[in-house]
Length: 371
Image 1 (cartoon, rainbow, N blue to C red):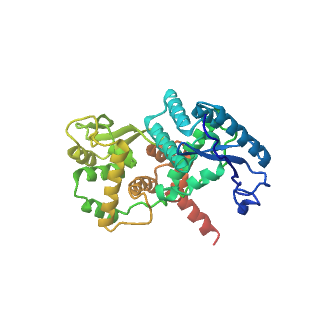
Image 2 (image 1 turned 90 degrees about the vertical axis):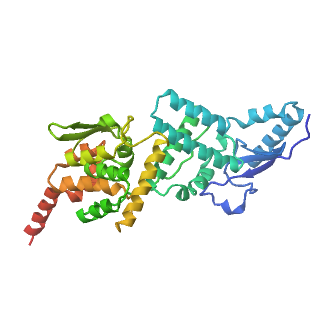
């Protein structure tokens, strides 16, 4: 038998509650009531299961009575608090493994849910049913410092939404808290001029980085796909002096097959590793870390060459250069979309429609006709 802990009833006001400024001990609003107490050097919090203050006080007294009578108060607490966030995290990640989701996607889930759980536990929120809009908004407020890209913040919120829906379906969360959608600020399409591209190559001293830059420029591959290109995905025919890249995009899973200039293919092979399944990747670092390191190297090279802009995805300008070069030389948008590995042509049109030479010529003719 233990001494009775002091259980405090408090309210966590909804963002639009008119009594929000009254503090957490304001009893008269209709927001959800919570219980808080300390025992054994740890602080606990849980929902009272009611919006009524008197009902919450009754729930607190009931819990005190159960704790005082019990010889195993830990079991009473575990039973009263429901599923812990740590337990839900393990169950969720296990469910992703059973569904055989791609490794890269599982890594995102693992990272995003762990950060959420760590954030909540640091604020003494240990259970799934204690998750509400307020704590999630506090967590979202930390994202700009963690993720510079709005696209990354968008994907992170999707991961959390999947986790919350899983908890709801499992019966651990009564209602999934609402979060405003993250608006993606698409990076501006900024292809390199021939002069800028020449400056970048001249500023590149490392042969491997130079080969990756050339590969991205002439195939449109993203930094991850280019730096992790497998040896058998660069197909070369020495007799006919032809080459092409055939691979699956890491981001979309879409298969792409892109012809490659013979002189560029030879430069890439000359800089590649002599052995191993990959042309550049040696397996000593995590795949994402390896790609990020090359991305930082390319950013530094652009800066040394005096080719900079406000875009945080500097290496993506090589992909833009590939796409705009094709469009400006009359290659149809549908074919460029396939070469870029886009799932939908609407994605290609969103970023590159202004660069379609034929379309621009028609617009010029229509405008001139009004004169």
